[in-house]
Image (tube, rainbow, N blue to C red; front, side, top):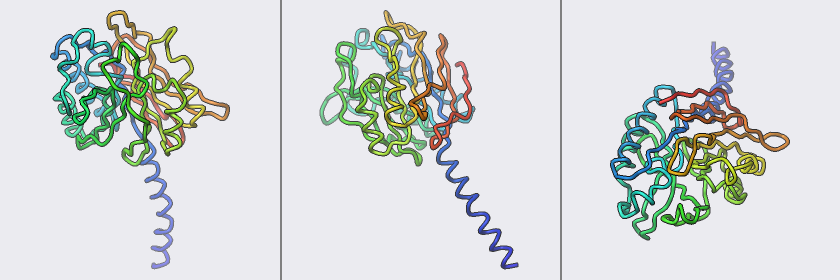
Length: 285
């Protein structure tokens, strides 16, 4: 009997380790391919916040672990020309706080692309908040490659660093951060296991081109890009694509892309250790 118990115990160990590894490496990631309402009044931030909450609830019901938004999801990209910047106050604003509470209520991770004025410096940043399942902000990435003119309201962040999120070393980029090689390469050298990017990157002459594929080929890390749709004044994002790019033996391959004229939740079941997209689903909201 003792021998039988011992054999069963020995046989059980590899299975337990395997199951634990699988749990660590598998993530269901929901990317919100949406058209934020361009903020003309502060009530427009309320509108965008409520739409993200609706999407978070749908994503949770579909089995999502993490939710990612496109760049500047609460204000729209060109808000400065309509709303100005005087409303931006130091610290965490009420819209972010409401989404923190939603993440806590739903037991869901939220990677929110929004803005913040740093209390100590008075400088505003275009950034991603990493909000955990308890609604706590556990990390940030501040956009480094800010664009003159359209992003003159923001100050570039410093060198990127991976963020530890539920057992994963996560590298974050915002839109044009993926244009040069150095930011993604730095994240890879610091031990990042996966790259995620919020984006507001239109196709065309100044579009991303093959920059996403280049960053993946250089780093050997998969890259998931959450782009957006809709029209903001002269900015037409209806043909913009959200993508999944993975490394291959010869470089990189785009294995998934999505574009739409309606707001969509892109649900991706992804095995991080294998750079493998297990399944995908699109839900309109």
